View 1 (spheres, helix red, strand yellow):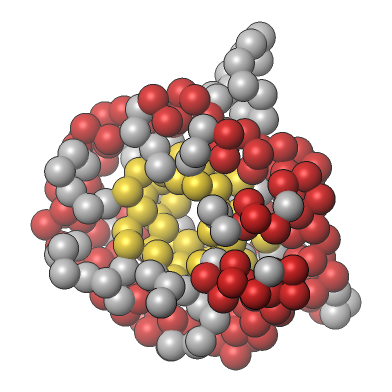
View 2 (cartoon, one colour):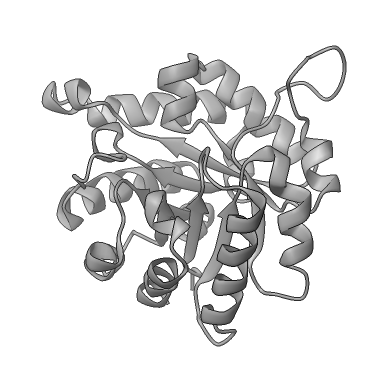
Length: 250
């Protein structure tokens, strides 16, 4: 049985007072009996403070990115060891905004994946296609290429200690989302791809859907057999809506 996971990516939002209010609301509303695991990913400057606010709660802490290097003269970067030191358990790697805006290549994403796992943290590997790639019927090829880059350096065994998030770029922050059936098709392809290399890992790896997930569409998305939760953007900044999404997953 795969435990559902709902990850909230705050992106570049939040100030200290707002964060404290949001976290208190989440702790109040995310009841311990919920079957889904909840994860929040604040901006770097607030990780330590949010970690302290989450103390004794069941909500996991994650980071939005990481440096591929372990340490050294890399101004402005944050290492996996630093993230572990402030209480992170998960790290997003390969988010579409990192790929599209900052030019992170498949090879760099794979190195970041390895850096995260070197500290025994869990990478959330984000994959997905642009609108042009979907309209060109290249969705499967693009997603497969992104996963293959990680498999080439980490091997299928590493996927057993990771989470995959399918996030069609055309559905992120646009108000559009893939239909449950469209999302399920890609999720099933991802699971089959991993299962072809290792059936046990293919069956157990959690695959999240990300792309304008809201309380209003979460239940239908999460009802699909290969969708194990969501990577949530804007809706994760509202405690009540994020709690409703977690309830839908659980």
